[in-house]
Image (cartoon, rainbow, N blue to C red; front, side, top):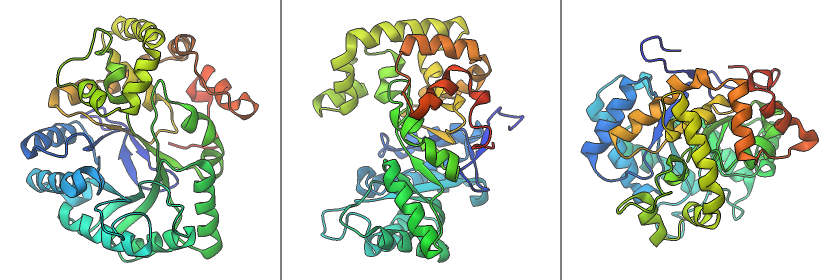
Amino acid sequence: MDKKTNMIYRNLGNSGLKVSALSWGNWINTKGEDTTYDIIKCAYDAGVNFFDTAEIYGFGEGETTLGNALKKLNVARESLVISTKLFKVGNGVNDSFLSRKHIIEGLRNSLKRLQLDYVDVVFCHRPDPSTPLEETCRAMDWVINQGLAFYWGTSEWSSAQIMDAYAVCEKLNLIKPICEQPQYNLFVREKLENEYSLLFQKYKMGTTIWSPLMSGVLTGKYMEGIPKGSRGDIFAQSASLHFKMYSDNKENWDGKLLKLKAIAEKFGFSLATLAVAWTIKNPCVSTCILGASKVEQLQENLKALELLPNLTDEVENEIEQILENAPMAEMDWMTFQRKNGWRKRFQNAVEI
């Protein structure tokens, strides 16, 4: 823990790389360099060291904006952990997917936009069934050996696909992935808490989770309607999966949100802060990527570090009784551990 900021740092998977438990990603803020800089400066001053982007965010604009902001921040490169994700950047026949050509050319182009010599972590943004897995693993091994990245990971891959990647790397003596970037929040839990159980036990896989507030649903701001210009307003027009899920479950979810809000307010915090703190209570979450588009939102999310000590086993059990959505994992192992407190969980699987 950083005594000056109260930031918590965790190893990213089975590696020596330490990342802040709270991080920032720019997928909703690819434009507006002044705003991006202000957010990054606020995050860095609070102890955040991990910043995430992707080639597809604004088709390169996200990386360019982040690169300009980091240059303006003017801090030692060694004090930052930067990641980007590769899968699609244009409409050319080889501008997409995970071929050796796109991984190498795509990463080099990402580095130009970021104005960096290397990224700390490069992700395969989605699985690619059109490319042999061996080709993808060899390409990731190559970019790391060339110094273009230090580590690699996956994003939104299934457990079976990740296991296959580990198997290929073990067989060919290639550098293994160290982390996965899945969605994880109070209402979306199945993949991380159930499907990935064996990966945490066998490989000590790390996670850089996204959407802890579920596009704003978990702030409670949509219970009274959709504010004009909010993400809900924008996503409603583009048929966002999150907003559709909320619309389909509004009556049930609003009742749960009101009860969760009461718990948060009992400790003097907002529902949004509680939702973020709940994710990082899970030791299998290496870092929670915050998508704040305003400094004020980021500051509210960062208060999760203050709330975290209040999430005792008793409080977690109270939250579980409200949610009633704990995944039923094999042998009920993950559910049992969640209901009996995180401190008893993964004693042999996760060392932080």
